[in-house]
Image (cartoon, rainbow, N blue to C red; front, side):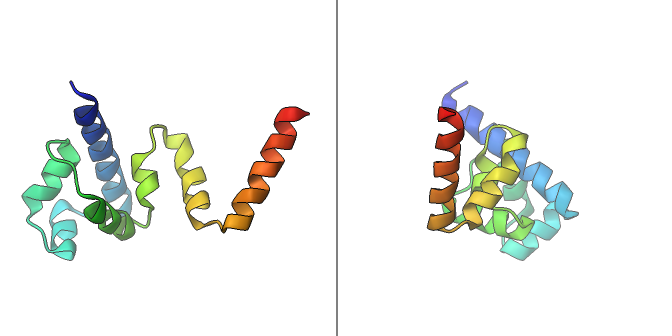
Amino acid sequence: MTTEAILSVRVGGRLREARLQSGLTVREVADRLGLRHAIIVKYENGTIAPSIDRLQSLAQLYGLTPAALLVEHDAAIPLFAILDRASVSEIEHLVRVLREELNA
């Protein structure tokens, strides 16, 4: 299996998890995005990968960020959600604190 196929399956699984956590059916997601339900099924099965724009639309519908759908480990999802909403100065402060901790 190629790296691209593995990524597509991983993202598909995350899309399915996000949809289920949102309490939406495949048909409801398809209707809200103006797509055929078969496309949503293919995304979730990893048969095809959504475009970046479509990934953004799905993430928004599920109350997530695209980064949260792309992370490898579930434990990182809250961190990516925080970082996506953080300002540049907040991220710079976080980097300074982490560097201090690593050097201590």
